[in-house]
Length: 176
Image (cartoon, rainbow, N blue to C red; front, side, top):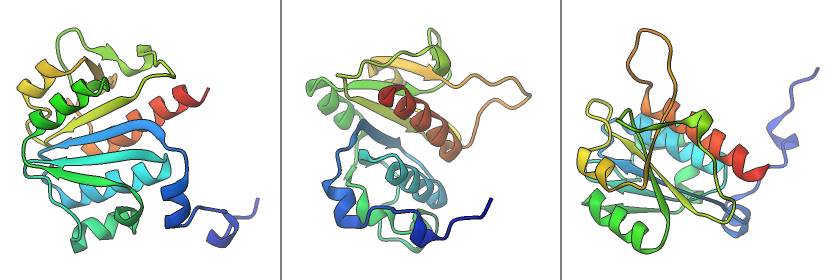
């Protein structure tokens, strides 16, 4: 098994990405502190043709060298928008009939592996602050809460890891 060179991977260029049909997923970052986490989410969003990222509250915006370090150019391909208030974004998404899903540990949360998607529905995945998680106001306003099952001693996963797990899972379910 020979490792492939980047030139053999047949990836889209930025213009091709912008023209490609997008996965009906939107990402909302609710007050993310780490610029490396933000960049990692951009890179994952690029990998799965995510429609858009909303950067809310204290979440930093490109261009920034620490975001660029992990995004590796994905800030040029993935559409993004800054909003000061996460709740304004949630209200707008709800008005547009986008199903909002807070990724959090909460009462009545549905485990990710038990969550079923509808292929004719658009979803917004809301990821929260590294310490406080998704704000309670945003959780309460979401259509559902999705929890990643965990069985070890730790209470949570890094936000960029959580984003990768959830985006992959929903992408795979939508593409079946």
